[in-house]
Length: 167
Image (spheres, rainbow, N blue to C red):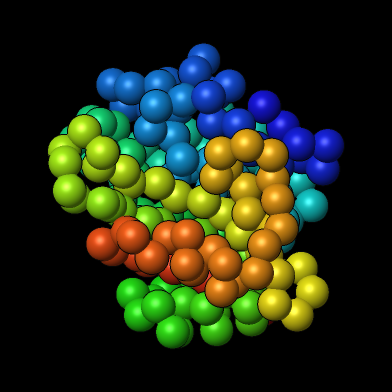
């Protein structure tokens, strides 16, 4: 479930952690992204089970549609972190490059209902134009912001939540 450096990257291994009427393997990507942000910004983030319980007030349709993004923003602000968010792709790239950690929500495509996807990933800058991407399927990896933007450009909606440590 954890990478060598303590991030959660394989959501499928979190099935034992309940999340609303679902389990975290199915719809826990929001709290997993929040956990990974705090893992990046704080020395000792709480246990994963604590995150799932703390964000229960932000679940959508009993967990069937995961976590409301503004519940994540509120949660991170309550912990004292500086949080900014954007719906504009050009601003998202800049914020992702400038922030200590980011949560990226993408929704789509809507071509067929069974292909519908709503997923949060966590990323943080590594070098000038690269980011490390976690919980995006497969091993955590590094890629350019342009490459990530191209891969997600089929999405019909994107939201970036940029987080910096407590001021």
